Image (cartoon, rainbow over the protein chains, first blue to last red):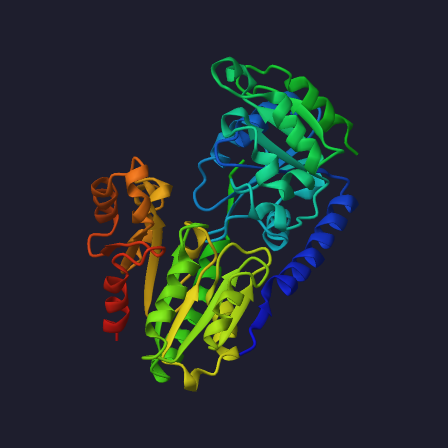
Length: 216
Length: 216
């Protein structure tokens, strides 16, 4: 008996890409610099964003969209900056999609924002599948996760323009070889910019800040 | 500035539950025994289903819905039974939802089937969030995954009626304590039936087959 095949993903992703394109146009029209920040749970996405806003809040009008399965745990940490923050709670979904981001964009005072960060749901797989229409994809990996992550989750690393390798302050306590990580990374994403930093100590953070600054 | 909260999940899950209820009614009307088989990648879902069909193919008219991100790798393994097999390729999604299963049911000759297995996407998190409308949820965990899985992924274990602890044939080579696994399991799912088995050697497989047989 022949196997029947139903391709759900194709239409679902086509529909998603259409909305991502609308998001891209809207952000361009409003002249907003935007970053989609992805990475495993615990890689340091929120801490890096907090430090980034701290550094740039006097230069840019920042906005944040926080993606989580539930709760406002992370978004509350941005309250002290008095900037617009929208929390998207995905419920069952382990990633943001373009439709959710569209709703998020509609909730923000876009006229007042010139730098927007989206913190995606903590997950190295699914967020990479869904285009959101933002300016740059950023992937954060921490050295506690092991050197093999780019090899095991190539899609996310291959679609990202910048990889932040976080928690280098504890490298001396771990058996982590940055050269090995870099070798795996460049194999799946030859053009990516790798920045080794520590969100905790601030080491090398400036290199990342400069990249944010540079982006059109 | 107040944080805005957008709850995507609530409506998404409500809509899903409605379709799951339709699936449930359809399966009841057609008098089909049905199982939603979940578990991590590599836990042994396909191997257990192959052995189960082998044991039961003369007693029941079986049907299979295979859920995967892409490809027909697993569904092809069922070809030798000459039973109806539908492959659902989710594309980006890391789980099946009720709508996908509805499409799968519509593709099958339901009048001719009295025992249906759905193999969900390999993932211990998201598949548990989406009701499908099937008779029983089954979770498969293999002893190579460690004893703590029920504690770390409680939802999937708590919604399942039967837990198959697979690969017990290699227990002697591993530092896995079945009592510890069982303690964690019963803490999150006090009513669950735990069956330790080996899909490879067939050890204790009959206990699972009896359960399938018993279910209304």
